[in-house]
Image 1 (cartoon, rainbow, N blue to C red):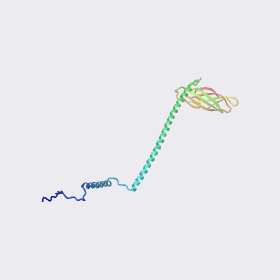
Image 2 (spheres, helix red, strand yellow):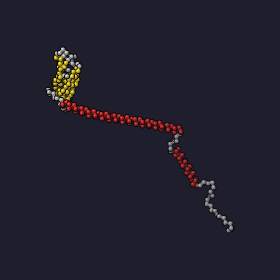
Image 3 (tube, rainbow, N blue to C red):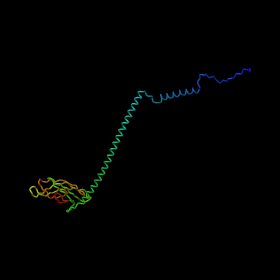
Image 4 (cartoon, helix red, strand yellow):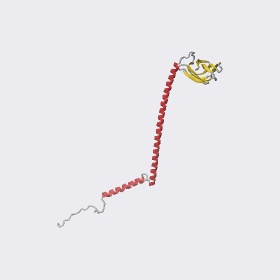
Amino acid sequence: MWGNNKPVVLSYGRPRSRWSLPPWLVLLIVGAAAGVAGVIYVQEKHLPPRLSAAESSELRSAFEQADAERRQLKADLDATTRKLQAAQGDAKKAADDLAAGRSGSEKLRQDLDFAVDALPPDPRGGSVEVRAGRLQRRGSSLAYEVALTRGAGAKPMNAVLQIAVSGQGGSGAETRVVGKPVPLSIGAYEIARGTLALPEGFRAGQATISVLDRPDGRQLGMRVLYVK
């Protein structure tokens, strides 16, 4: 009884087969399967359907076309932007030129005011003074330039200019040629220019410059000038 001592093995529960899996491995496999099943469920029920190869190719073609159109639109926008910038540059240059022209016109007006003021006064006076004139024979006509003044700040007034030229006709007799009245609007000053037809062979000597309020009307100013 005491000579054959064997170890006593205590067993709790059912003995495990040597082919059974560990519990942790079972849990890992079950979890992986549940994860795969969850992914498949979400893809099938909640995510957009997966595209076929043909649909993917069509979608890629549509994307490439849209991208090409986007690049073309960008190129068109860049070209339009450059044209707009060029137009803005031209507009600025035109504005600068206009400002410079106005400045030049203002200087020219001031120079003309000074030149008119420097002219000798009309010895006859009158409400319209004939300050200076230049009369030149050009073929069978008389070219004239006459400076008329009314004083600084005078508002424009309607009048007519009439020129009567005295001289010798083709036969040598004294002849007088009277031109038609020329309408004028005279402000502070006015430079009247024009030509008067003369008879063939007429030799002009002097011209009487008359400023009238209307044809055959009241005389506003008058001066006699020699023809060159």
